[in-house]
Structures are given as C-alpha cells and as structure tokens.
Length: 283
Image (cartoon, rainbow, N blue to C red; front, side, top):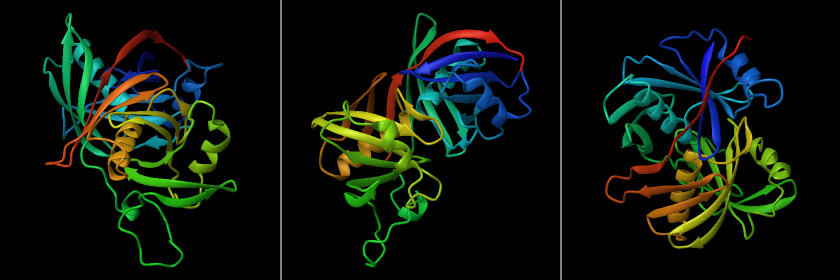
C-alpha cells in the first residue's frame, strides 16, 4: 500500500489516496500504521476518498483505531495533498467529513499549497449535542457548559465544553508547560460526563489576542497540535471573556490563527500543512 506522511504543526497522520488504493480494514490499519516502534508512526490514519457530496471525502481514524468525526490539522493536509498531487486545480475546495462538509481556501506558493484557511462551521454549545452529561446539583439543565465545575481524579477544575464536530473540554490553568498531561488527560477523556469520550485542552491565557494550549486527544493521547481543539479554545476563550474574536493559539507544534466571526457565527482556522515523505508498506 502506498502512503504519504504529512503533518499540520506536528500533528502527523498517514494519508492514503483511496482513488488509487483500497484499505479493507481501516481500524486495524490505523492501529498498526500509527505505532511509532513497529509501524510507520503517526497520530492516526486518514483516507482520501471520492465523495458524492463534495470535492473529496476525508475519513480519519485515531491511533487506537477509533473513527474521528473531524480533524482540523488533517483537513489542511488533505487540501494540500489533493492540490499538490494535481487531483484538483481549484484553490477553494469542499471536503466531506463525519462532522459535515468543510470548505478550504488554499494559499499557493511556488506551485504547492503552503497554508490553508478552513471554514470550520459553527460551534455547537448545547450539552446534549456535544455531548456532555452534566447536572449542576439538580438545577435546571444548562444551555451551555461555560466555566462549570468538574472534579477529575480528586482535583477540582472549571471547564467550558464545545463541539467543533467532535467534543472538546477546555480547562484554564496557570501553567501548561509543567503539568502532568499524561496523568490527567486520560482521566478527562473517560470521565463520566462525556459519553463519547472527549478531547481536552489545557490553556493559559497570555493576552487578549494570544493563548497557549496543550491537548489530550481522544484516542491518540497528547499530540503536538489539534485544529478543532484550537477552534474550541478560541470559542471558549471568547465566551469566558478572556480574548478578542481573533486569536493566535500557540501549540507545541506551532501557531494557528483562529477567528470566530460575530456576524455569521462561523469559526475560521488558518495554518500550514507539510509533506514529510512518501512510502510503501506491506501489512
């Protein structure tokens, strides 16, 4: 099977062109290929497929084989792949995902895609749609989970929950660099509040235009970047009054620029996409 390894700010996936290749068992393939010792090594597997509804379809699988609804870093890489491989000559394309059709605008430099701006759609804030099961001491059900208490592994936190097509729990901390993310991330992921598990972002506010973030991704553990997570963090930061509506999100792998348009309610994410190498593997 031929594949390409790409990354968005260090959030790396293995990409397979399913116009040319067939992956019979993508869940099993994702587990094998993602292994950084016995496989290729990645945060997961992305299949680029034909679509009846959009220009292309992106099917993404986490490193544990679970299917993910959406990945912001991966969708930028898909956009780069299809343009750079001359599967399209359009600089504005639509990509079908489990979270709906997303729209990408490509910035070209030297004949290849350098960065991509993605219309990530509107954030979902209704708890039942995220989903989050949350009972504030028996009070009437909340319409939004914003700055609400949660206890994880015996420690009290405040969380804001957002879906960008996949569930996110945003937690503000004083120090993101020194925290034991491996120890607490898995506890958040499988907390009883989150029936479909959850991606958790730990955030330090730097100023009104800048935040720093580390992320524990559902099914993959800590990654160097998470595009949907950066979008969820921007929405949460605005809802909590921490930032303006355009935010630079600083991740371990680099920066993303995220905008939450006040008029339309749409979130836009802009960032780079990088080719690493091409390969062929028998498994």
